[in-house]
Image 1 (spheres, rainbow, N blue to C red):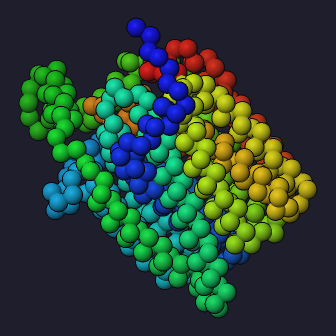
Image 2: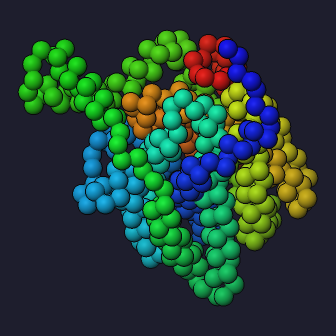
Length: 457
């Protein structure tokens, strides 16, 4: 039987589901820490007189996001004393990581970057680890809000997760930039340190809001994982401490990987992983240096906050929701091809801005175009990997796929500052190179487009 295609109105009505509001909040919790270790940290170091290369290499702390799948099985199984019993397994882990982030902000508020750069980066690394760990359980809780057979709701949920992430990142950025500028104008010498205390209050408010996200109490996930362990123990031929440990490691780390390759076949699975790794590298290079570029070309923190954060957030919300509808109707594969083409064109706009000089109109156009592109690309990407995961290994398998995508964006993009320096500050050429970086992923996607086993392509 052929399912009747939904109208645009019917597709938009999917967003009325109360679960979408909960997913929105989870996305905000996930996106907010990037305000701290991306834009705020980069601008803080820039205003302290540190070089572009130093700022770029400081971004290596994002590399932990590429490896959080390694400890995802631990997050799936280990319960947090007191917190798990009171809040639930997923929420307990989120709150624990939020506490770690809050304490890190308190430490940052006492640090002088030029005198204690190593300590500052170490604390930033702690925030990144806590954020990456938090993302494991946030993504799992988000996917588990929706039943496995609700493909359209999953696409809508992916859109809401992206809207939430950008809400946490963009509005968090507005708060950070305007607060820093306010303290600076008030004559506060350590205005960034004072800003981090304000951002700590935001973390507390997010934890309060988290209590309104329901966590399913009954789940057969752990029972199925134990079944896998027992199966492996049976293959080992005996049951003792050593074989139990081997079964645990094999079942929780090896199980999700084996399941993924078995489902797709080696060639297609490798193609999927290649695409996931390459898809947003160009965007990451641009994003890592964008706030430094805005500052060098002559825009104030207030202007950056309005155009890049405030206006960008509104654009992102609208076009992410539309991107979710497009993914529901056209499929994730076509949506990713569309977004890839937009990425290339958008990066060219930044090249034009670099060559023509400071222009608020062109700045606004470039930022809006970039946010539209990011909205379509991210919602398609999130829906894509959400549909690929096995519910028995929700946290681990999603973390694995997301980590591979993050690896390309973080490890390679950490050289973005060095690339600008190598180009002697030629921002135009830099943005041209980021345009070219989009092409390999689209070539990879083209070869596997008709063979990927997901519900809607």
